[in-house]
Length: 271
Image (cartoon, rainbow, N blue to C red):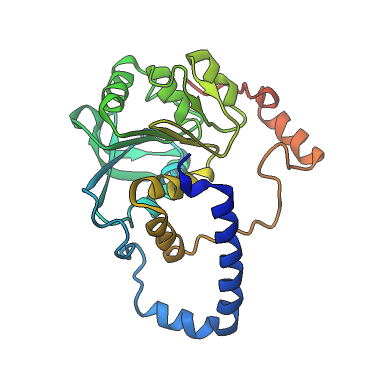
């Protein structure tokens, strides 16, 4: 991981953040009123940081039955970066019906995309639309020339199946993590994993953290933090049960029963 993830720096940023939070609490109402007049949801972008870099072409490869939050989360971050164009492509192009009946689009046709700087493959339980040989060939083709090859959740299984993750460390949703071994990838339980030009986020909500991490890689820590503040990404979950290592045993065991094979990271996606 780049220097922005150095623990010393992160500790300093955290302490600085706590001090700023206290100040915000004192005059929060006035600041919020001022911000409301200048920030437009969906249109606000980071400031000057990172604007000197060349434009970045970022592609989400989405597909039928995919998980919306896997790409909607990081898109909230990346679409606000300066000089960054976010695109969406799917196997057939056009409108895509995601999990739970959500319709997204229109999208480009994956085979029509010639080259991108960053490709990101989000995840789902049903990966079948992306696991067809001709679709995996396009994923591999775009990955070979991309500056960064990335994924969220079980999207790493699609990348691995395309052959681009052989010998590379990768994250994945904890319930499916060890399926990566079947394709020659190295499972890594970390929330964000970077191995050279390959970067991945763990389960569904890790996509937002992944978005922050790749934003910092692309445009620097300042630009990433500006966007973090724009979208008020300040997670404070009411429970600490988002990882099997942290979840209470009763909760963990109940979820293991819901997700067969997940206890060993070997739950089977639909291929």
